[in-house]
Length: 394
Image (cartoon, rainbow, N blue to C red; front, top):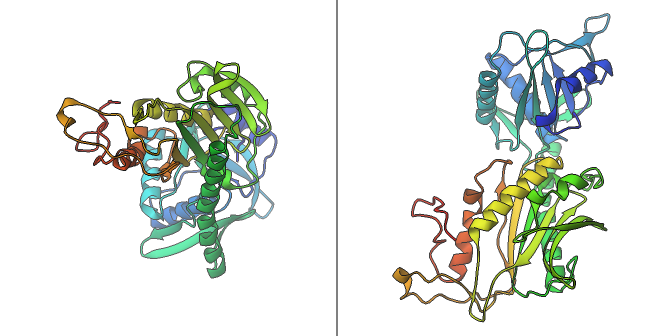
């Protein structure tokens, strides 16, 4: 895989593959031309894409001519980056996306194409397929079903034992994410936050790249320090930020006083994000600003993009210190309604999935918002209309 976010790959990066003789591998493959529209071409394309998703992920570079040995067999190294002649890259990308969408089950999340211009015959197109944690993905085409994975010399069909192992691995990922969240919330409830937090009523948000369940995923936090401390990615409900390295990675925070942290954002070394901040509350009610939560989640997805994370992302929301309280909401038309207090603490909401960086966050978070309102006796969040569309309220 080319070691860059796909939208930052340049002509120079493609040229460097040729100049340095970078060989094909488990995570990199070269193709001189795009898949055609024949059934055989489509099957080959679907097999290639699903094999990367079922293994470690990787890039397919289209428009790259490979070297041949004396017998005419591929040597696995690039000869030149000539590009793809006579194509409309946008149309071709849409065509390939449609083939992928209809030909693999379950759908592979987080797939990206990038067209790169400046080559003699036309653009080079890079297809990036992330390692999938919803694997194994099966090719479903013309009444044929096949599972593929990736080896150093190309794709291979999985046997029964390998398929069974792939399903078991997929199930264990969810367990790892839930266990991480449980351990972190237990620490926060016990007061073991990165900095002391005096406010008893809190919201805790985790954004967990599914690839981060792999213990081998680690970043050099020094390389990403400037992105992490960018004011665009402030801790939740904050008006500024300070920053420092810590044992877990990088911490940004906003203090009320020298001894009281208002909110913080912890960026772990495996790219998992944790942010915690106060919810306004009195003896009966607490505030729950859904509009702000939506905006913060949007910013954190962009932070993950900036530090090289790949989608999809699991989003987990927890409310602490809300037992016996109800959500503040008192419009005149509902003055007759007596809300119910929340009956547990912490209130740990189920996870939801953001499949890409540009998802409609208000749609992704709606089930969680509904559950908070339902915990207080309401039918649903009143910040969405009857069709489930966000109305921009608080």
